[in-house]
Length: 453
Image (tube, rainbow, N blue to C red):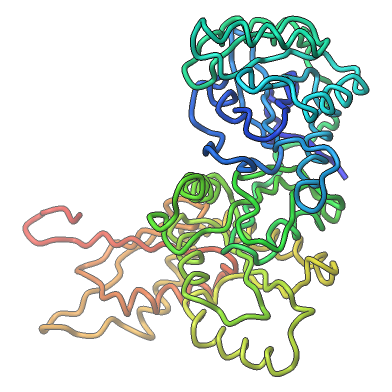
């Protein structure tokens, strides 16, 4: 298995890495946003919003580096909290330096001491940030952090930016000057977003593909908040998988960190090349599932529908699911499909060829000669219906671009939507566009030399 942080032979793969750690609710994500200069990490005034380790790009004084935000570290944790702590420890292991954040207004707690022990074992350079020093009166409280034995505590206010410049200078001093060695020379892994409503098994699927616990998984809906990127080798091919937060019914119905998480999930769809929409096969297909599928189609991304939890379905449920696919998913009949169980690993290996097929068709190009020969045949066999004494015709066609395949049809008049759907259906039959949307644009020849829209 090959693991890295960025794809497409990005030079960022060689940037040094800073892991931001600390106990819950000390302001790590707020400080990350301050360091990178934009609101990327999800922030809310309750502990436990960040659960996975998430990477961001940063630039200071001409030097570029990667910042890894982590969930709050808790010693002797159980359940999901233990998984969060494990992710934080893994971030420390893979980083070049560690930014340890403490709350100066609270003082040193037993949990802070526990984190210090982990940091000492790692033998990584540590920069200590005493956060929430919003005015000079609390600087004395920051000075008390010398007692942690990690050197000078940098008094900062992540909320207001106070002291952030000195902190960034210290981070650069702790980072190596030489670029990181790349784990593997790989070129252009394909970007695959794993999307779906909450608690359908998206994170479990990524963990199964990665062969290890890469993402925090819990039965509670909404465990994933930030999109999580991971390069994973599947069947000899490396993909950049993006695990996302479950998309709520509507973004406006979400609140707090869920609202921003939903926006980032939609952003993940936009930057992906193919989306694997995970649907719970053991439950009826919902309007929420259909809305997510529509959002992928509207974004013009290749589409794979993964019916997860197949091990929980019986013969009766499978018969009902077949009916639901024929009735509710008829408009997505072109999507590639696979039945699997992320929990048991059953048929997960079938995902790679389906993803490759969808991506191949998403990038497919049809020569102008073949396209117009095809159009000539269907127009001759099935001409457009006569409307108002006129019969518009398709005069010429060309493929404007791929990803997704987009065709422009030059016509003698306006073409009805029903006829366009017929042309798209025949295009799919002729050239096989399984797994990708197909867009048709009409350029109608107007009277008196007017150009159509």
